[in-house]
Image 1 (spheres, rainbow, N blue to C red):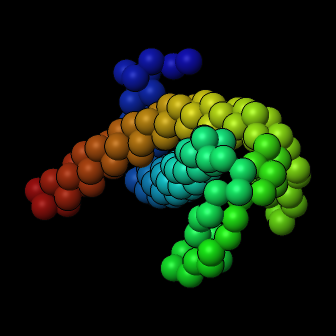
Image 2 (tube, rainbow, N blue to C red):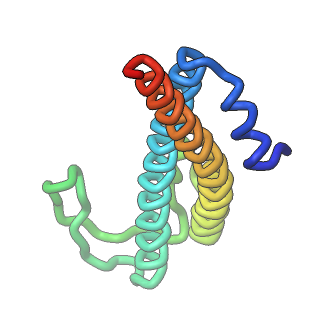
Length: 152
């Protein structure tokens, strides 16, 4: 991998139009990566909530009366039946029946996978942001030089 000073040297060799294009592309990639990180955080929060709900459910006795959510703000009374089996949403509208323990394990594996993906994307984001910032600084310097040359 090139060092920061050699990367800056490569940027110094570029023209203003090339630097603008590089900065715009890097900024676009930074925004896309930030969106991806936000999506991972959202998915992780849903899985953490699901894992907590499974844990809470596993502590309740069969026959326990409870409120069952139909929407985020609409609940109906229900009775807990077969708490040892759960349906797990595996995406795109597919559900798999699992034991309570397998459901908890599934959530934890997904949480660990998302954490790993988040860390990897964060590293890529930091590098892209560095490229965008460096290109911006070199671009500003070249524009200032051009302005100074045209005013003298």
